[in-house]
Length: 231
Image (tube, rainbow, N blue to C red; front, side):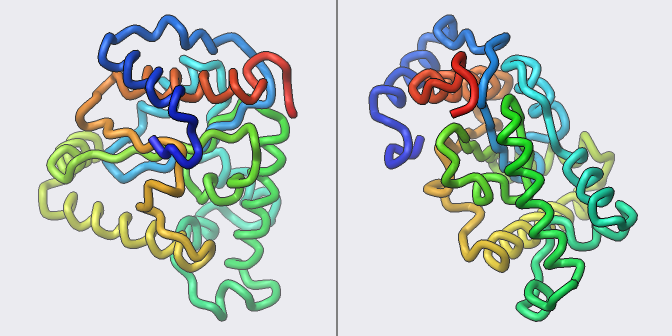
């Protein structure tokens, strides 16, 4: 937990709940308001099931692939064309050349995330959400990590890949996301200080969902977003 962003009493509450496996105080599902949660994850740390499960647990709408679809629609380009720049590093010329797809992608993505966060009750997966919404009071930022061995096993299992291609894919995705954050935001994607909480899903397994829901619920309770609506 990033104690620069999360009060110590909330950190203590999370640790106690985790040790005792008691999440009864995290009754946030069914509440509504200006809640926004951003989820950044290493490939193999969350995979396809984590975000939908967390969203269902908390009563949030998930935007992952949907972000790309809405962006493509707004920009008037095919999704296949937008995928070429989605979460990809970019040089200065590509980022700042007027009218370039990279520049339009970045600007549209920022506006889209701000609009969705303003609507509230959303879970935004990847694509720099923690940076775009960094100064939004009601946004809670989480990063999922796992050990290399766990990530490799999950990628091989979920994507039906042999070990060699799986290792290559993990390395490529890590490099792309590091580059995306560095080139567009000037920040370190892997820095835990970029997030409110960094959760090791490889060690916690399904409990990781409960921990994130609990921590986010305490955060929104403190900021008044769990029940009172947008702030």
